[in-house]
Image (cartoon, rainbow, N blue to C red; front, side, top):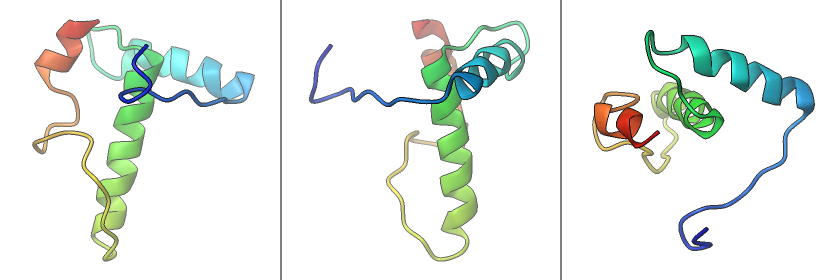
Length: 74
């Protein structure tokens, strides 16, 4: 992996299991990776906070939470 592009995080086993289950249902007829589930959650949370005056770097370039390009990387 490219350390300038990717970082690792640890999570509780229950969170890992939750991400696994969410990956199956977030987008119908598509299976997301756990990292994509985390990216979606972080983007949603950051967008909610944006309205409270906080500024965060955007994980996606448009208002779509996950683009078809991202889904097809699989």
